Length: 231
Image (cartoon, rainbow, N blue to C red; front, side, top):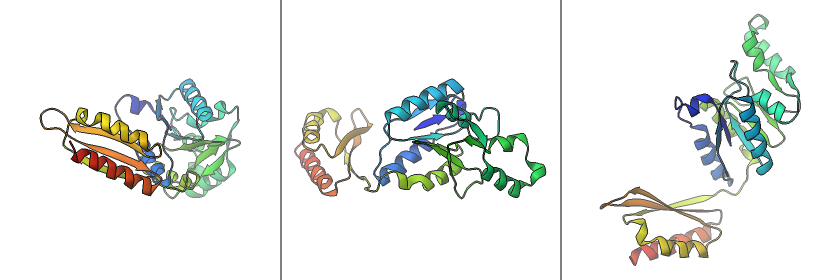
């Protein structure tokens, strides 16, 4: 995922879209491999997008497709693909019907522009669609619009959901680190992670296990619980 926006990098806005995407994709059986954050700078967007789209099967972008001067994502995506940026007839028509011809100002016309090879990503929350070019999905940065657009593309991302189990632990990680490593080596189809919540004299945390194979997941959970009881 490529998150685009100066407001995220400056700390003005708490990033929420990648967090939501990670959850929704996980439920569909697809894990985010990387989350990159870049500023509203043409070269940074193009460089980041080209690296990710060649490295991974799909890229979801978030941010920079609105009506203002710093909304340059569509243009950058077009340039990354060597494509032309056009005013899409359908988007123009929808906006004219919604706002009226006399209200089609420059800002709204910016929102009708997509790469010429793009297919549109429509959702319930806005009349201004996102776009898909090859393996890149260009979505809005506004959280409720992003969520709606994300829902409209989730069928492209897997059909066997991951399941997750969490085990509460009141021990320092050092006491079970070696044993947990041994269990992980026995289950290459189960991801096992240890996440401390509090260190020091009163430690606590969680051991989290996830897999697309429910039977193997339950076996791994049983082994972890048995290991902890022995400590």
